[in-house]
Amino acid sequence: MMKKTPIPAEIVDKIVAESGIKEVGRASIREVKRLINDIENASGEKFVRMEMGIPGLPACKIGVDAQIKALQDGVAAIYPDIDGTPELKAEAARFVKTFIDLDVDPAGCIPTVGSMMGGMAGFMTFVRARKERDTTLFIDPGFPVQKQQHRVMGLKYETFDVYNYRGAKLRDKLESYLSKGHVHTIMYSNPNNPSWICFTEEELQIIGDLANKYDVFVFEDLAYFGMDFRRDISKPGVFQPSVGKYTENYALLISGSKAFSYAGERIGLMVLSKKLYNSEFADLVPYFGTPKLGRAIIYGTVYAISSGTSHSAQYALAAILKACNDGTYNYLDDVREYAEKAAIMKKLFTDNGFVIVYDKDGDKLLADGFYFTLAYPGMSGEELLKEFLYYGISAISLGITGSERTEGLRACVSLVNRNQFPALEERLKAFKANHQ
Ligand SMILES: Cc1ncc(COP(=O)(O)O)c(C=O)c1O
Image 1 (cartoon, rainbow, N blue to C red):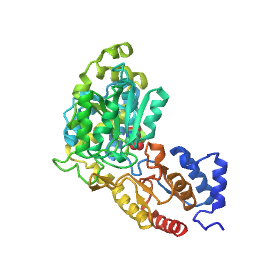
Image 2: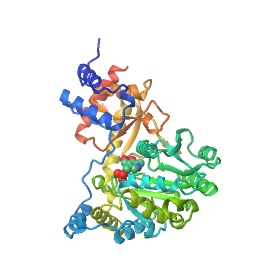
Image 3: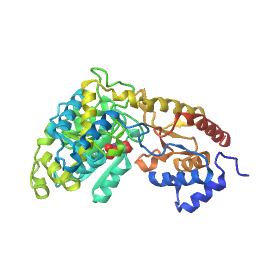
Image 4: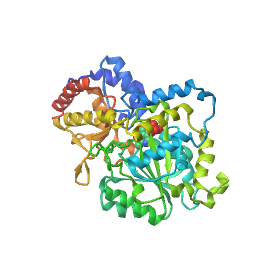
């Protein structure tokens, strides 16, 4: 006999059949979202939604006010400079100094239409720098859309799951790729989407040393800037860890989306190190008319993709960064809510027989933050994802993120409201009871 579940099985089965999705466990984030919407409508039950990585907080008011003022002052009518407004570039360089302790020039701080575009612009340009280097190396798990960018552009990439190569083991693993000479860029996010691992200083040093040894670019995606809540980067002398301490071959991606809850305005920054901004590669010339990497990105790639970034959103980000730099606004106070929710939710899962998949950085327990990963012993991630539908819980499979931990799911805490915790607890208890 069918076990009783919080969402009636007939409804779930019917909607899944109608959706045409063959394997729910392998569906993309957007497909899962659609499916859950349909099940919610048909059952009248609200899901505990952990599938989408979108901010769950109001946009930073300092940004909204500055953006409204900029619009009222007329910037909407005027094309922004492709390399960004001087105010934003200056505040961005200050921000990088204040919170990462790296010295960059305002010229190398380039606003982009979200980090998404920063990544795309970087990949498009870095791949042209040296003919013999045609491959991006992803340290996975990672953000699936960056691989989608490679696929739509026909660019090559390789990837490995870092799970078994933490600490000193990372060196040999990276060298096994880099020594072949075909990699132009190493890409990773830190804190990591989806696993929320944060590289240790030892690991960042290994990446930086090897970037120097093999002369590759490192693309460090700081979409979750400062959100390793084990260290408070708003305190003097505490910084966002970065590979930039160990190599000058770095480009950073800083997003307005999560740190400042500004996802809707699509604003982020690509920050090139002084060395990268000024470096020259003869192979760039046929594509960009210049050998200079910084100019190629701005006047070649960013110009070609979008001709710059929304003028008013640049005023918003400039005002937010200025307030952070001046010490009049501590953005971490706003986003700490994610860590507090994650701590409670992780406990609800582990109390009911679940395990955290990516659980440590070196010998330290992982930080609580925007995402966590979970598994149920004896079940694959795909089975678990499908089974969760009957319990009104949604997540995404780690399998689609380049993780080899196919037993795992990624849970995002942002959209889960605290008033849903009792329902989550009840559903997890029911799940446990049905899977003893
Ligand atoms: C690792 C990572 N990089 C980039 C992005 C996209 O950021 P943006 O909204 O600035 O394009 C995200 C968003 O989820 C992300 O998780």
